[in-house]
Length: 112
Length: 117
Image (cartoon, rainbow over the protein chains, first blue to last red):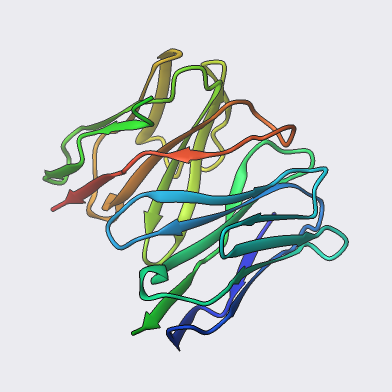
């Protein structure tokens, strides 16, 4: 059974810092991987999608990479801002299945 | 497109009552997913459909839970009878296609917050 771990579980940093959030899968045969953001009491917003043929994706200050050999993904946030405060979740589809399995999330707080 | 639309946004009911949650996926999306989110268990996949057909319901916790997708634009998740431990936020999500091929972006609705007293 696929399990997804995100480290750290919570993070509090001053504004302007560069951050790295980690995600690891027990089954490394990941097809697609998505990173999401969830604000308190809200739904999930897709940030980045890494397709099966790709190794990383970038959008603005965000960069996500996927190492398929190890089943690990990282989300890099450059020059963090208070508006980045939210919970970040990774989710992946394992080869042979068709369902996104979610990680436990990282709660990020960026202090002004 | 208005995105994935869920209703109701909030539901408070008493134990034993029937609860029906509704979802309208994004037009043209072939896959629909129901997730449940709690503080203790995080985001759990309950069931997903492809082209209106249930593909995997292994995440449905008990026979009290059932889901249907009578057409491409509508799905329901029903709990009968409801219990306090069913209290959670239930999310519906849709994607263009099942599987890992292509830009298979998963788009979520705003969720239905269920409280069972």
